[in-house]
Length: 442
Ligand code: ATP
Ligand code: MG
Image 1 (cartoon, protein in one colour):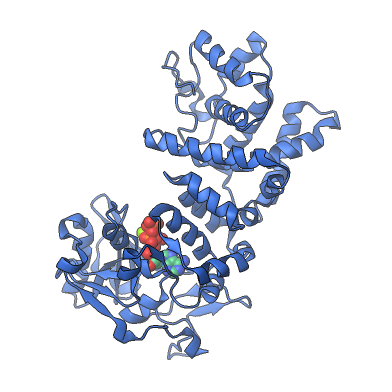
Image 2 (cartoon, rainbow, N blue to C red):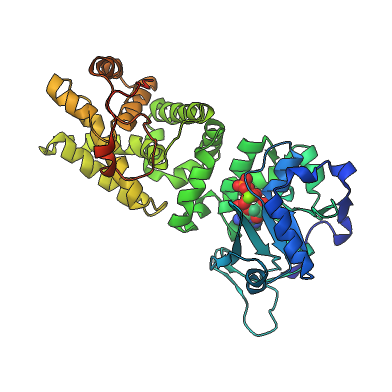
């Protein structure tokens, strides 16, 4: 058992690189992160900058945040760093506030089947191999082998400028490889979110996942259903609310993870090209908005991802005799209920999603009085954007999108400037709506 967990490369493979060799400049590291490392070191602890920030710097990207790894235990960290607190149970980490930044500080992890000495283990694994708790602490080297990919297992000391690499991450980055640490099958089973992370890093960084991991991912894709639905909500946002959304979605579709995450939409994918076209058009739209610094809300993304399923459900219920808006609400509820088994979408998001779907019915009504009222609906912009995307993906709606574009110009825009501007629930903003704001049509 232990043999299997041991790293393929021996610890002699540890490499230390100087600034001249690795090229990371100290001035590119956030001052706050350096202060955190400094504070821990001045208390005789080991501390390094680690993870995505080191990887991003090596790849010439701007890190979005900085993570620190240390041999100090969570309780010790909170004593050393002011304004810090322990969060998480499954995986205890410390959030340290430094200036306006939030630095995530983690204690080195050890092997999860390592005895803790006091009886009982601080790690728990389910029958399928899923690691349900992982608070076994270890040393720097053990920590390096517990990380997910070699490119994420690089430790930078901002005080002396050394980069420490146990797993060959620097070489892999330079060769464009995304390499799972250890046996990919086992690592994906321990934590299936790593499969999503693989997709995300491929899309974001342009690295190529190694062949073994690719096969392990295909083989274990159903395991994603074992992940807590609440955890997946954010993971999807991290993959698809990004400047590389289209590529990431293509990858999710191609490796079969998408159908696991969104089974009802997955069924529609099998019915023809239109669903795929809609989803990809939505991702392009997200990318374009982000490129223009416009906000894209999570509810908007999820409403789109589920729309094909909601539409199918609506058509199935259509002849029930109820009013179309009611049927749309029913369809939405059914799809959301089913989806909750996989991804838990918080209520503050499901409400505006339902508003957007209901608007698909209301937008069909072009009578001037009704249309004016629809235009003043809180989520009009988001609903209208969905309508345009439906048309773009080949749904024949009789020029409805263009009609609404023209209608808004005539009426003078009254709806929210940004379709998906806010994740705030609908309703509250109604009274604050501005009239006469410039139309952001299209
Ligand atoms: P980004 O910040 O761009 O999302 P990241 O790699 O920094 O990427 P984080 O979620 O911030 O991702 O995690 C920080 C580091 O913690 C990772 O680089 C990796 O070393 C480790 N890590 C995160 N999630 C896992 C996981 N599920 N399994 C193993 N190691 C992980
Ligand atoms: Mg990070």
